[in-house]
Image 1: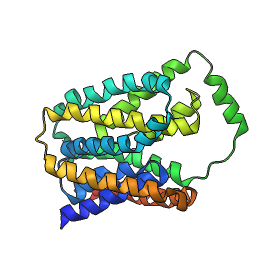
Image 2: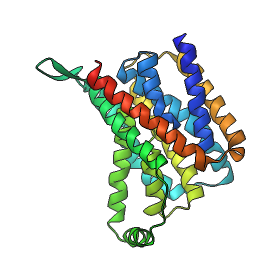
Image 3: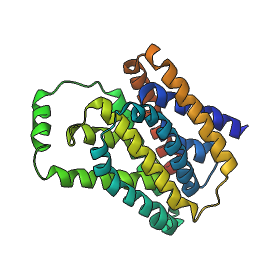
Image 4: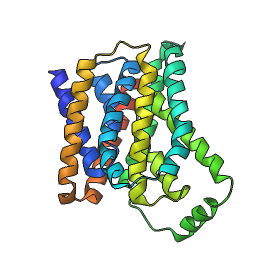
Length: 271
């Protein structure tokens, strides 16, 4: 029953990606860990593959139309790709199964990774729930900062951060990538979405290659789950024009908020 339930969840994840353009892939890790009971290193590795394939399908339409910024993609992707590969290849295999044990309270590898994950998913949920308000003063300040020489180093730091988070918790990092592309690299929103999906696809698939050497991959399961996710995103793309993403995004934000709280409660209170 559990594998079939996972297929349904991943089809829904793809559907959400197709409807609102992001956010859904962050739910893959909890499904793999809490429903299918995969170890955290396997779950985050599998998630990278699924996110990579799904994001590539989502990005293909933008690439075909030329709605990506190749210069920004290269500028952001190179440091991010190097970081995500190093995290998966060298850091994850060396994490201890138990970090420390104080008075019977054990801090495990899964607890550390899922704590970082929960912070990320809660941040993502808040960004989807809150209503965007026009702030002319803030926009002017960001515009001025984006023209200063220091912004190049700021972009570099954020690219490395996205690479680290992608490799560490197995997610795409779109919540960080799109604002960086828009505010600091001055990429129009339409191109920012396509560029972000392309970066996520590259990050995820390169990160997954760093996982292959130290994990036994169940390719049959991984490809079948990815297929369900791809079907979902294609279905979401097909009906996206009929459903208001402005209404759907806050609702999904509340759902991810509940998932984030569940992860924290599960890891700290019900180990």
